[in-house]
Length: 378
Image (cartoon, rainbow, N blue to C red):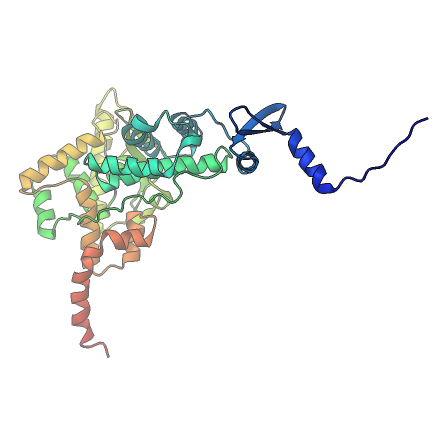
């Protein structure tokens, strides 16, 4: 004969009993709790039961917000994985730039740190160390911005719960004065260029504001002689130390069509004839359809064009970089009264604000013209 006795146990004691099953006090006085996930048991320790449970709960929360968390992957390994995945979506020169920035400024000191161990103070220290070494605010800002993009992707992929760079302020860009030629200096520059192909290239650069990569990527078929326009559809970049033709542009706004004046159009026609004559004369001509190119049809090395700018500038009596031709074009247009929005589209800037920020030095000259017009305004 069996006797069963029903004993009602208060729920709070049942809870305490269950807790006791999953935690144990160690000989060193700490409490240990465990959590089993996918057949693997994880242990968490604390000086009190509450502390051990808190660590376990924090781990569970981390798994919820970062389901693909990897406790072994390092920053260097993750950035390599991220770049391989991002490469098809990046312009060739942008990808090369990202790789250089990481290798030059970040990976030498932080590559082996585990992703999960990264802390904001580590990036603040890196910024301070790089600036102390003499690197410019712009260089440091760009390098850390690349890391931030990579870490944000880790968060999006569930590899990290939050970005360790969240809240880290990057150094502000130091505003520099844009260097541009005056109208007289531009004319003096053209006067010292005896090479006919170089003359045409510099003339077109001054009258269109195209970037170096864009003007070297121009094709003969990008010149519409009937509509008096040129279109930017590709660029010439340095990749792996060699010039290549890239189907990409700096940004979406850079792929554009702009108008040219009658004199510039005649220079373009002259250059087309020059290029076609070279194509007929050279037995080893590589026909890439380029407008400005070497005699054998291959693209100019952008570094070579930059070297010619230094040479021609010295001959004209002033310092010159090829990019100054672009600034000269924009500055002279604005001083002539062309609206900032028109200049933005013409230059292929991604935003109106970029144009305003870059050429704000022209505003005082524009303001003087406004004062003259106010007299007869009403």
